[in-house]
Image (cartoon, rainbow, N blue to C red; front, side):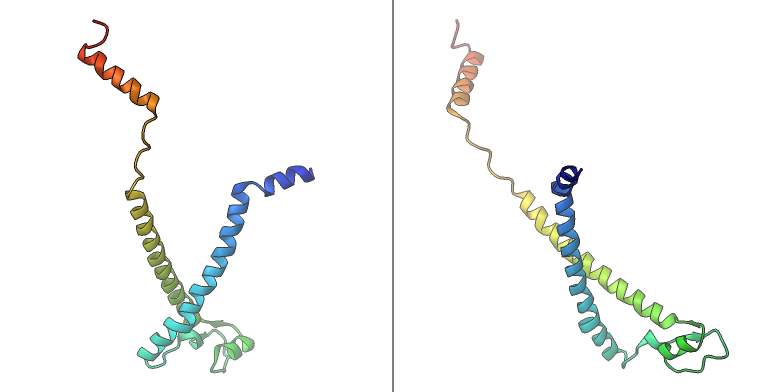
Length: 142
């Protein structure tokens, strides 16, 4: 059973999938940093420091806090600002991934557009081609 599991785990598809997951997680961290550390501060500067993450609607009269973390401790709140912030982050991340995949597809098409030159035929194939052409012309076997 151990040998069977080892054979399964070492198949190309499983190893490729593991590598893809690891690279995907690392790439996700890079894109998340791009959104959090670069794009969102620019958006905040353009909109005058607008930050939706602390906007909420209290669902209980007990909630009197002015920030979301304290309000959640006091009772039920509808954190619509946090939802809006995460939705904007998702849209920005999706757009960045779209651009990256689009660039990769363009590069892949350029590589595929220039197929390699066909290999030169072997001497046997060249000889057989000459014989065929002579037979078509009627110069052999008459």
